[in-house]
Length: 106
Ligand SMILES: N=c1c2ncn([C@@H]3O[C@H](COP(=O)(O)OP(=O)(O)OP(=O)(O)O)[C@@H](O)[C@H]3O)c2ncn1[C@@H]1O[C@H](COP(=O)(O)O)[C@@H](O)[C@H]1O
Image (cartoon, rainbow, N blue to C red; front, side, top):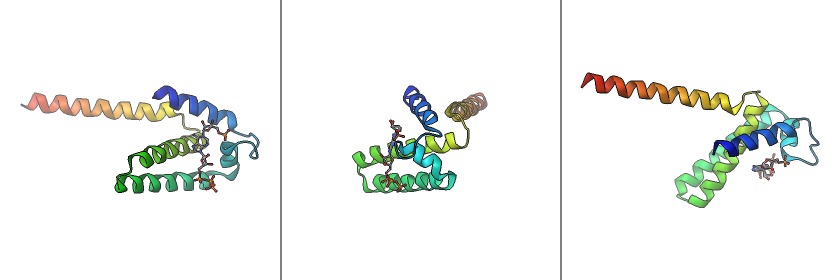
């Protein structure tokens, strides 16, 4: 899973400054942060609609669109996905500490 995102991140980085006529990602970068952010918002709403409708197939597709556009948004902000993973790992550690503390209280 992480490898897939890492590959996508590398492809997206390689498209930076590329030909907008030849690449969707280059086109997004050329349009700028507000357009990329708008796409993330749209894809998030579409994923939410698919989830509420109970449409599993649509949700998988919309989730892929959302993760893809979020990866472009992070690249546009010069934030490596690894930094987001580190934050998730930190939170996992915090929840582990909370569980440990709860066990100690018993
Ligand atoms: N994963 C994706 C991916 N997911 C979705 N999309 C594109 O995202 C767009 C979303 O569709 P929409 O109808 O919402 O948007 P649109 O009408 O095309 O654009 P707007 O008018 O809304 O700006 C479609 O054009 C899809 O093709 C993607 N485009 C590219 N990738 C990955 O990015 C790589 C590089 O792509 P290129 O930059 O095109 O070479 C590809 O090899 C893929 O791995």
